[in-house]
Length: 233
Image (cartoon, rainbow, N blue to C red; front, top):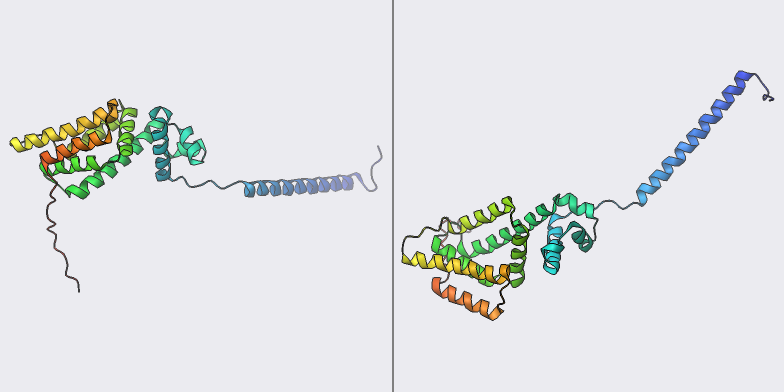
């Protein structure tokens, strides 16, 4: 083998210099490829839990509890399954979030009729009035979620607390309150029969039942607002 002109040491220095130049060129090329690839990839979207809950409610309404899955919600939302799962963790947590939101929305409608800290009678009146105005879709959604979480201690406890804030311990002091208590139970029984058991009932019949219950208890009368209002300048 014939060495290039110059000493062996000079030849080695020249070879090492060329090797470093080649490695530097390759490194720069790889950095350019990685940069171009990262720029072409779409940035991850922020996961909107409220939007996903809206989509999940639509899936549950269309397919029932059995069809509610991360995959189904992701497909309907146009997102990856991993993104949906990262927002809720488990399917049960997703359903719990859906039920919690429904309870909060129903409570807001109830409070609009009953006011803050209503009496037992006003609570029953407002409860029946709210149930009478609730849409069939909303009622069906609630029953689907309750059925999905049957046996879940956390949500059974949440619903029990919701009832407790609505009617307390069901203690009554006179015959009128006994009538109110029976009216409340009749309203819940009608809901159970129609939406949980699936008893066939027309919208007209449902409305007729709640009109009877409303006549039994009357319209809710909110307590007057006793807060001192500032005079307008």
